[in-house]
Image (cartoon, rainbow, N blue to C red; front, side, top):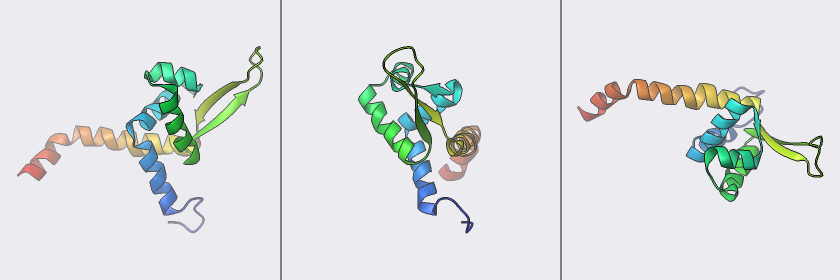
Length: 117
């Protein structure tokens, strides 16, 4: 790790571990497509209960992969609370998980031949 790194190796590994769970990956992917979404919008989009999403959103937030913001200018008494990706999550998602999954899927036959033979 570079000396000026913002995070420790353990923190980087935790980011990938959190992002690699299926619900968290789907949340990150939805946010990458829609820019910002509330918990209820995510719940509808991913067809998941709010309580389950809240657990993963909290983990993603704690791992610096999403941020939660409130927009008081909604025209209602309640502010609009929404989630967005952080710069770190865009890197983890695009260059870590998505690229890795796509590469594995593309080379699946070669990998299968290597390990079954």
